[in-house]
Length: 404
Image (cartoon, rainbow, N blue to C red):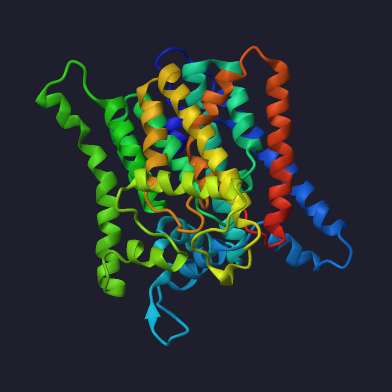
């Protein structure tokens, strides 16, 4: 369905199939291949490193990767905790990505290879969808800039790793593109699949409603929005499955505590307050108020909180740009996604994983392309800075350093 949306003609002008999806997808893959090779060279160059096979795997599988592969192999089996109790900890990882990995692994005799293949294909289609969205509102040149920003973003290596981020980007951008083209059924189906990939998919709903809202409004025309009900239905279906599989329909929310996440009583406002407070304490050199001593990153936490607060400030500024210059639907999606991410902060590190969450916030890439329009020096400097940070982050990820 996503390829059908990409190949569908735009409302304003006809373009060939190569310009619709193949060229931007290939460009994205070429850039990510260059980054992967650079990361691998940096690892192999290191004296006394691991065997090549282990180094290859370290570039694509760390941290959450093993959880996704565990679900792909054996489903949502309870895990035994140190106190002897058993909890369905893997329930926080929504099912579509591991289901696809398992399906591909029936053809390819390697779960690692299957996971990478699903991510690479989905991320390439997602990049093509982002390019198509940017092209429709910005034009060809700025769309290329947005594509380069996405491909060079410091955490973009997650898109082609054994993570669900590449699949989520493909589905969420595809749903948005379908809504831009007035295709409610495609938007609803792709949006529901995005929700089945990550709960962040629910952030699509307000923007999709706004894009597809009938003008002039009537009850009969509003009824055409029914496909968007598939988004909350997808979350409900997963809850029903968990009820029968593990005995807890809300296990995906309850088990967030294992990763230190807490739902703030004030929602995103509470998360924002925690983020600002933690960033200010970090800037002042103060110790975090709460800290997981088992994580082994005590010295880095204040710096992380300061840097991530800066990332949040930049994201909020770009969200405003997207709202004002691209349209309310772009700004609404970005704002809703940030609100969802802020609603479940980690006490000692409120903005944990924010740079990775922003990979799905494609309006920010379009807004950044707007800001560097007509400024070739700034454009090159931005892409070079993102590339340098991205290579460092990829190497750090391969070494087991927590990134994002």
